[in-house]
Length: 230
Length: 384
Image (cartoon, rainbow over all chains, first blue to last red; front, side, top):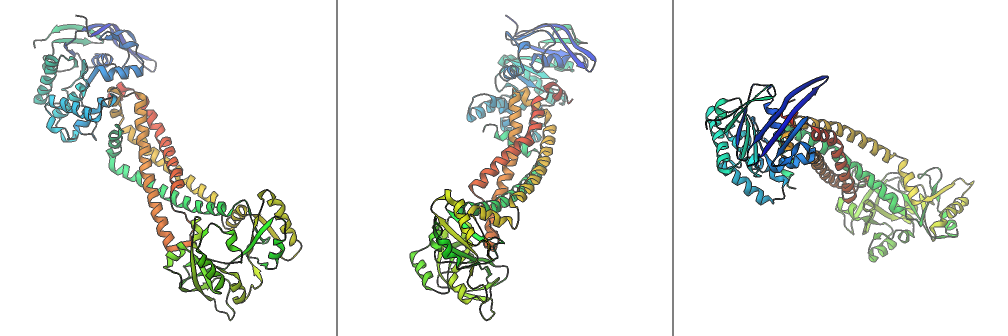
């Protein structure tokens, strides 16, 4: 089966004044459809940069990056935004929910960019909230939810438009052990039962164990790839 | 419309700040509404009196200098002049000095030159037959709860009666309506009564109004009329009625300049204040805007959201301000009547107000919106 994410000789260089910082050096990586990959490594190793590139939030300096056969490294800003809206779901460490909107409205956000009617949007958001076990909290605002619940709302938002790929940046980094476990179990379920391909950045080896494969990054280079126990 | 909750949510993020900004917008547009109401009233007077076929002849030295009544016959002989009438400013107060009323003594052809006034034939007859008769504008009658048949004592501002009393008693014989709403605040009585009863000023009128057949001949006719009095003790100046109205009001104040100066200062301050609020609001929400972009909102969509937020804020405040201005004008007109020439805050003022609101909203939202549009997702999410 061909890879969902296909990365060839990918480099990312940031220019800070006169200083040239090479964050990623010629990365080669393939992620198969339905795979759950954990990206680990010390701070500054380039994990989040690689995740941002895979999610189409940033563009590489060199190399090629294709998702589902589409060369996203060639897309302009507008096209990349449209691509993100339909192909990727994002989960952040600090949830990044909009505080003035209810859980339901937060989950509906990606659907505002579609042609779905208001009632269809509400129905789809309701289904996504049900899937993460928060149907009864639909009218609650983020401030009225615990960290774990907020992260589950963020996951509902990430899956509501049914993307093929989920990119998660330290999704359990701000959670207590139990909430982290709930979130990881949920991600694992989405991967196994719903076939979502997941790329997750984490510092936590226990979190990484929920993935099917663990990749180690160091100083911008992939140094190790191993199958996880899970 | 599907983004409205998102825009509203952004505005409600800091309720106190939004409320204070809204208040400043309300205050600015309240002032705008009031000044526009006064300005429109003056403009309406100029435009409606200013029918092209009408000329006004007043003393060259000013409106308060009387002209001899004998001039009317001479003006009537000028080729092109169809009808001549006279008006004399009388003025007066009712019951207390603050109840000022615009009272005019009018000549016999007055009705021929004021066809926009709606008055019953019976009232016209009664006016012609009653020495002390007055006809009263509907708005003025409402203000003082007058009705036909009432006898009303008016204290004259300038002219005492023979014997020295300043109190003139009039009989209301009719009420009129006029599409020129300001005129409904005026009261008219017969010049003949004035001429017989006044202690001084007999044989004189304030100014003449002429109806001419051909507007293109206005210049020539005006010159001919003025030539009648040249080198006399009462030289005249004849103008079109719109020029006359403009001159009349500019004696007191250059209203347009004042209105524009005040509104310029108010809107400039408003733009600084609202612009600062918007900039602060967008700076605070940088991570949220980055999230929207992450989810697939395009640069243009983010730009539009911020601009819509800013326009909505000004539209809300502006609409409230104009509603308040409308209510204030209503109350003031009820209390002060013709002392304060104001038009209701309606169609044209709302239209100009809406244009100003949208323009201010776009201007104050432009910089923050551009900032939101151009933010880098990666930097914003990383808090850089």
